[in-house]
Image (cartoon, rainbow, N blue to C red):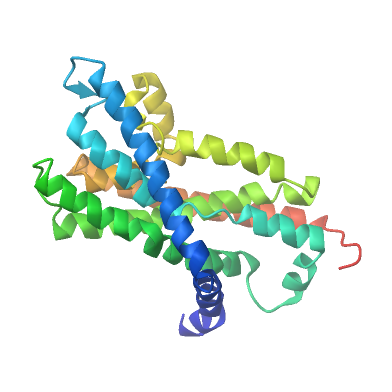
Length: 271
């Protein structure tokens, strides 16, 4: 275990250092993310303001404020590695990764972990602190407990693995089409919708919610946010965490199977 960390941890630290090297991009990223959060906030406030109902999709207006910003906070786990896979395939560098004494997928996961830490530092942690202060002082809601924070972070860790393992499987398309930029744009738009980042899963019809229960997407953003907000407790909480763990195992196994298939047909020209 320690030997593996010594091999793969530099991928995390190097990626984090490269992201922090450009201070201008660091601050611009914070501003852009905050801007997107407030756009979603005002849209949802308009929705609640146009109805007399106190609850929509099982969430009150105050809870929706927390959900909107925590959904953006939780999106720090959404790291796309399919772009890196596509780049390696196009440049032919994937062949060099095959002959190195390391696991290619693990190197991508640890590299993505560096990006995740960067996104947590900018801007997720700032939004998180801000919304927690606003929730208590303005909305009058109870502060989050330490145990719920720990459960939330545990859920986020599994969400990160689910996202990158799914994206690794998606990135394998590059071995067949080489260029997947267009598909990545479509995937990014769909993922924001399916993960609950734009619209809470509870707003969908009951039949659709049951379908989401059997898919990995709701476990990426929606589940951690609902845990943080205290919407999951008891058996429901245990089931949500177990479902995340099961999807980690399924996507890891699926990725291993696909990787074995694509490397058998790999042809590199140049590089």
